[in-house]
Length: 129
Image 1 (tube, one colour):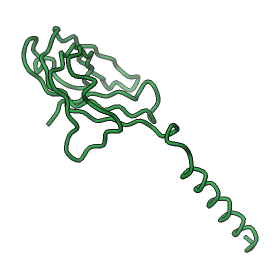
Image 2 (image 1 turned 180 degrees about the vertical axis):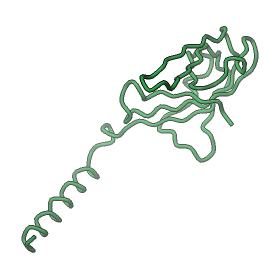
Image 3 (image 1 turned 90 degrees about the vertical axis):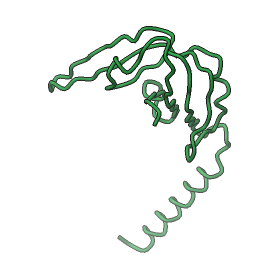
């Protein structure tokens, strides 16, 4: 490679980095992480899928009536978790035993939303620690 080519590549990289840094905030990805505490409002339903290689994907679905929501320590939230309080949320947990979820019992789940992952992967729930 010639020095001229290297300097052009460096200039192009600097120009690209400057353009990304100057992009308006409206083009930034939204990321939210919230711990949701509430009461399980429906019986859990289990769905199992089997991949062609024989592995199993198990999902437990239920409705949670949210009583409290807060941003966990050390987590990022571009938005406010308060919008989820006093709402019924449909929760899908992967690879969790349905017996851990009981209707009428309190439960704490971690809600994560990352717009940069695409529509089908943006929302994820996990049992909160």
